[in-house]
Figure 1: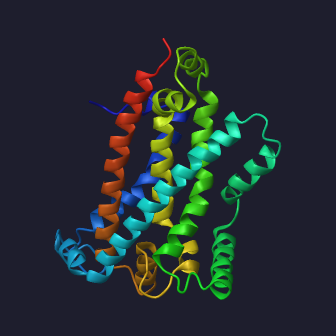
Figure 2: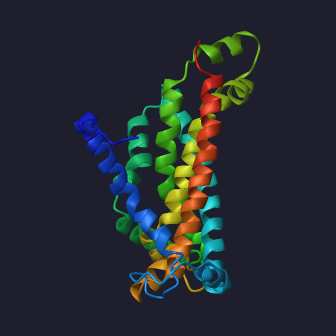
Length: 273
């Protein structure tokens, strides 16, 4: 099969340039994670020893477990609160301060992470002086801070799905005898389930990726993975970090692929005839 450049359109060329710009650095990173040499820029042959070294590094593995816990709890709390916030924003028409409420919920979307991290730090310090809690900063304070800024993203995603939903389905369920709770659980929740899954994955990724906010609200013995990696990179990138990044890329790709499949099946199930 020959490559006929004459058939390439302007948009197709820029499409492949964009794909290369996005994914070529990841491909290079994955390749160099199998580098035999300690120097990441000098290829010395294929080897998996850096993956073995990675799993022997208790400090990094502890940070991985800690970050996964924080991301899981932050995403779950952000989505749970986001559902209630979205219902208030979309369904309660007589809510007089809805505009103000919407602005306060979505403000972290445009707020710099430095400001959020610094304000959360001052809040925890003030609370510690007034009521004695939190006595020290750690996983709990990171979880609260991450839930706060992930809440804005989850609320926007879920409220967008609620706005698009056909309310006549719920009205039909109410006419047939269902109460408000039954209509929400049996009708609304399945319809907005793809948005809930998307909001959870987005919040999980944002929490797992955060460096700035976590660096403000963390304490001794509660270093997350991004902070651990950032500290290691300042001393020089090693193939061990490349191996860790490769595993994260594969894990996120796998979860995204599974989520995409189930979201697609759910959308087809509730697609209007």
